Image (cartoon, rainbow, N blue to C red; front, side):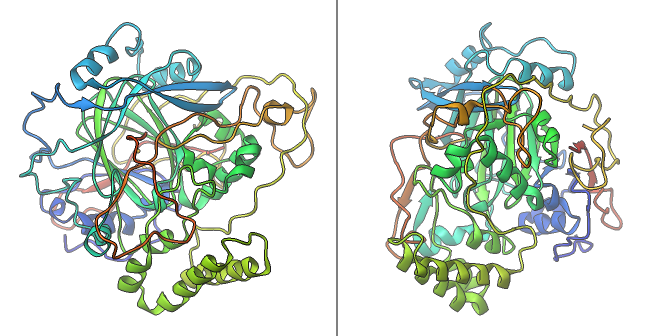
Amino acid sequence: MEAMTSKTNSTQNPRCAFMTFYPTKEEFNDFEKYITYMESQGAHRAGVAKIIPPKEWKARKTYDGISDILIPTPLQQVVSGGAGVFTQSCKKRKAMTVGEYRHLANSGKYQTPPHSDFEDLERKYWKTRLYGSPIYGADVSGSLFDEDTKQWNVGHLGTIQDLLEQECGLVIEGVNTPYLYFGMWQTAFAWHTEDMDLYSINYLHFGAPKSWYAVPPEHGRRLERLAEELFPASARACEAFLRHKAALLSPAVLRDHGIPFGRVTQEAGEFIVTFPYGYLSGFNHGFNCAEAINFATPRWVDYGTAAAQCSCGGARVSFPMDVFVRALQPERSELWQRTQARAAGTHEAPGSREQGAWRADRALWRAALGLRDLSPRREPLPAPQVAVGRGRRRRAPGLPSSRRRGRASAPPSGAPGGGAAGRSPERGPALRTRPGPSDLGVPPPGGRAPGHHRREQGAEELSGQAPAKRRLLLSPACTAQGPEAPPLSSDGPSLDSPAQPSPGGPPSAEAAGRCWVPAP
């Protein structure tokens, strides 16, 4: 543990490769210190990292007796679109137990198809994405960790996020309390960053693997711009419409549009940690059970204060940042209070001179933070005027056929200096539907308008309904951040984130998996 540095190193892992870590039993004792160590090796630059616990560690002694756990609101996922650009909506189903859900997931209608390897299964996933409507047992409040499991128990991580409940009396289910996710083949979580751009940790208790796609935080804005062009009406309706968690984009689409991304497969008994402002998406290979929660470190505070919020109010999950700024960045507290006061004064007058002054204060705040990875957000662009035409279908790239240890990942797809050839966490309310050629169109046959990406055939504006996270205010000590934070819905759950070895011990981490250049 003495070899672990406490300073985040942005020069490590310049290619934003996924990394897999193998902590020793001693290193596993201090969660926050090990996260800091991972970041000192550059793991955060990929947006996601995998952790293989020590062999002697167990989350739970046995999973017998969990069949009677109730899934209150299973969500049937319905997908529309085509050519690698899809929208996902959710329909509530009647409550069922885990035993009933397992039986359904393993039935002929929903079971995993025969496949030779992960690469073959991924091809089948994207090829059949429009067929079938899998049911996700998502956002089930509770934990399967044994109470006497002290290390890496997701319900008791002991990070600075605990200030929310300690200082504000605020509990947000799925943010500072754990959620369980029961998945089946094809159930998916759409492209999103975590609420308030927090970290997250996901432990796969048992069952089939889960595949993750991630766009490195430093390239997140590029994914947002692509989404704005593919879903223009949704972009106009909400400044952060990807928080509605309804947009699915295939690896082929990301690659074709030059979006750097990577991919990793999580298996039972493994942790996935996602980092602030890392865009994520993925799918389940079959029946499984995962547990997840958000957490925070001092490095996150900069991201939390600059996090974009859903402006339409349908998928807004926010909380006051004042307590974190006062405790961890006292020298910036006055500037933060000024930007918040300016925001409160301009809420009723969008586009006014006061709002312009607030934006100037906001820019000053971001400059004071020095957030290299957080480029300024632009206003949504008008929808390109294109005609309806025929688009060509794309095939998704394959997963690596073998997983090698001790080998660094290739740079993410689309990363500078890489070529495309040979390289190749889920909840929210509806996004606005705006029918018409501008929402379904592709360029006229023979080309596209200069300066515009081609719009995928069959891509509809994002729609559907998934409940928001439940928010419980246990104390009036803190108020919601900003004047525009409406009360959150409480009518049900919603949808589902080589290091150097320590001296004198075995290697504790290494780069693993593969990234692809084009394209959380």
